Length: 424
Image 1 (cartoon, rainbow, N blue to C red):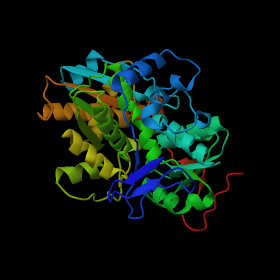
Image 2: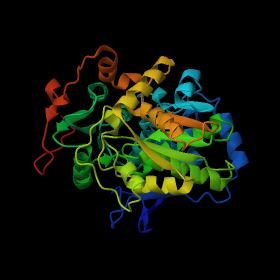
Image 3: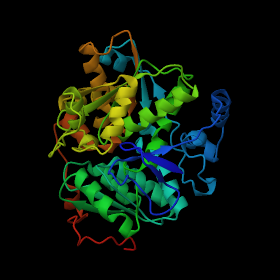
Image 4: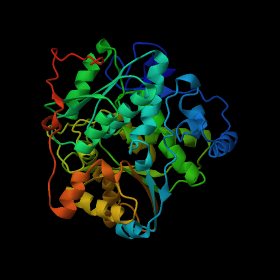
């Protein structure tokens, strides 16, 4: 499997240990496919026939598109939970709230672990297994951890999850524990955890499953593949999604670029990336026309999945905006929770980070950036039950949040003295 650096263009291989996540120049890697003479109409027919499969790899909403995601990966290594296959909905109350002519909600919250991370995680864990890794690791504000621990449990291998000791949803940590991961809480932010894994993951024998992993991006491309197939290969004017680590924006752009180049779609939609005001370094960079991102040292938002001050995939996400004439915006916690209440009342439900997409769409429509007569799809990234404290706070005025280490989870310092022992 081949890759290239998104910054300097240098070639890299992902076909053997040690797994590479970045170029020698520090730039992130991107998988490069040789689709050759791929026939879009033939593949559309193949993908349509797989919709009726059960108990096969093709029944997965990710591996249905294997020819476009990881054609060289042997089927024997694929670890799947029939991820993808998520619903697409058009609730009238949410359309009216957003103020747009037509709106679809793509509910990635219906994935087996409850979030869009499953689309990328099945690809990452399967690739790691094909390279011979027997343990997997990530740092997480929540959804990545529960997804990784689920796939590791499915594969029968151990996993290590590092979580910040404040500002995350305890629901997600409990889900991660239930799947059997070894969880360690550390003082600091998501960015500190990424840094530690970049420096220490390989020496501890772990395949790192964060969004710095280019295979995560390949799996997450399937979200836009499935959305396009849902809509008979005619995408709306806009696709709107929340932005935390920006892996979803990166994957969306790569998927759109490939669909357009191969002739699956006749035009590119525009993309809007929505961040929280308390954790919006990417929006601030784009809004100020800066050439580089200035990290947010202390990100803070009710949408805990967006609590990321230094998103590792910002350069890839910026390419997505350039490709699609895209935009960014930032919304307040109050706007996020108002949008969440609307989505919840539609009978679909979502976690606060998902609602940021709907809040951002409404703000962009009200500001005239998106015209009321246009069409849009919002990506709902996580389920309603991912963060019940947000529901308590909004509806009951009660705050039941507790730091994970106060609930018996081991607290560690991410330094050279921290040792990984996945046999515990």
